[in-house]
Length: 257
Image 1 (cartoon, rainbow, N blue to C red):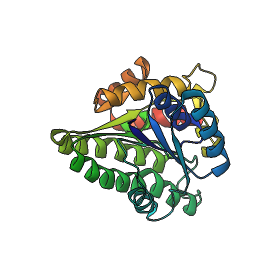
Image 2 (tube, rainbow, N blue to C red; image 1 turned 30 degrees about the vertical axis):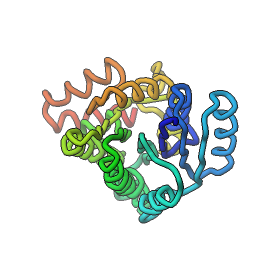
Image 3 (cartoon, rainbow, N blue to C red; image 1 turned 120 degrees about the vertical axis):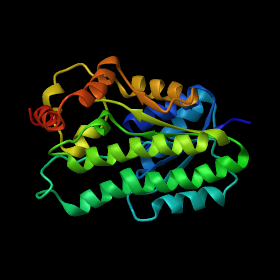
Image 4 (spheres, helix red, strand yellow; image 1 turned 90 degrees about the vertical axis):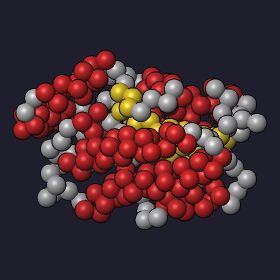
């Protein structure tokens, strides 16, 4: 019987790439995203190419209690989730006092609340079964504050801190939690966030597939914090050794340029 990977935000970007990687390794899939049409296309493609079973669920995880709704749907089915990948999330560029609050609230719900709720609920099930793996997609944004993307950076800092702590709580019970921290990636993130790429817009950046393959290997190895790329690793660590006010100014420069 194949393992089952539940992947949120699976219709594009890193989520779609993660679905492909898991299918390549023979895992069945439960793919969650808002677009039912995209999910159906992906289901047909992956089942035909990799001969795995793909289940799809169109659900807006930015809505209140969406995590509980998803967990209840899975609990009422015959599906057992071995791997939970909390990939769904989005950002928004602009000053806090000028941005749309409803969009910001949806961001917090999706990036923080739904991720936390899903981690808690599925971890409880995994403990009962004696094991499981969880990946929470954070970002290199988790390592510093980000003017003009203040809430997004803060949500990713939460994901990193939360994942490290919960991994410590659960690892003795056979459940590992990995925080995947990609840097800029070829995905749909910038379009949704209204971001032009900042100072790195003309740089060569990794594909979603490269990030997904790295994340898969890190999760399977039980790595707690997985920063993709040598330069991203260096930058995430260097920020600890410079004044915080300077780090914030540098981050704003990279976002605005």
